[in-house]
Length: 122
Length: 423
Image (cartoon, rainbow over all chains, first blue to last red; front, side):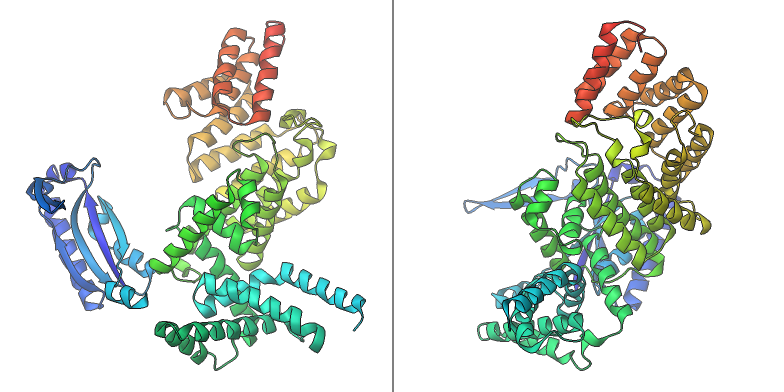
């Protein structure tokens, strides 16, 4: 079963982290991804640019609107994701707990729906 | 067959349902991999028993019979539905395939583990605390939706919705049906024990409503505690059961005939249930001999110190303060600091306790907690500071949501009004 681990962190907090700590975090993250790759759990992992670089797109009444944002109310922003294959939620949570950023932010673990399979089950 | 014999068998099946249905359900969930399928299978199995046992006699091992009958009925059901849905056909075939050794004949260890699997799944941290409680009472304790709704002063549809959502989450997120491995056991057991204690406190000291004790829930929590101790005799599980038994031993003495709250110091100790105290104390000793003094064990030790005192005056407050010191280290929380402050006031006098409570309130920690203000009011009253005491009782009154506590505080306020320094 596939799970998407969404990595949230406070960008303001990251901005004031000393460069040495950021480098260490990146090294750890790369190493963790390599381990997940080797164990066959990793499907894809990516870090994301700051939310200032983001846009939000909507189509309403056939019209496209593209705006600056997101303007999250919360103080944590989506900073990256790790897409994994795991036996069940417990294994997914174990894997999420090893993501280095879990120590400074939080990881939301979302089970992935297989849309094609959902449709054929109807 | 005469009606008498048939009636007797029916009664035996009823009794069997009460004693065995949760075990059978726990195993069926493992075999069928789905809560709803397992519940249907359980009902089917008991229906089949009602039909066949009066004719063929009761099987030698009724539990094993019910498990395999439930499983086969479920496979049949899936096959019938499979005419419309090929996926169910595959599922039925897979379930049938696993059949090689009759799963119902597996040894007791595996079947006992099924009960633990059920408990740990119902109390999975991915479920909200409300859902954990509802699932545990429904699936592990076998309460009906109506009973759960009544106990928590909510409507049966609300409870049903919580349970449906929890089952959907178990399915969608694939929450495994397993006993956590050793490394995770302590944390996961903590959640389970927390659920049991939530059920108990809701029964013993409901957060709202017009009665002090809802004994059905307290009994249910103790039953759950016994089951946990039987299946997993960890020190904290022993400690929790001991704590619940010791607190529950005071049930009859805790309220007056007209439902008013009676404080520990004013209780008629001859009404305390000695059997529960003896059982609780023995469990506590077993837990302490393990050498691990977790929060539940320490709480139980404090309850035991009260239970052992023949009169309120003879309470060993020095020992209780010492236990609170350990507890504040094992499980730091402002509520524990508050209880410690009250114990200190009993040992060293009201002004020492008051200084501690004021320090906690100054940190802004318990300002919305009615018992903090009630405890403070009581110490002010004992110090003869009537006006301050009245203000503190007033604050507690604004914050309490429970009718007997409200009456108790109002009574104290009336006493203060009757004469300054009269307390």
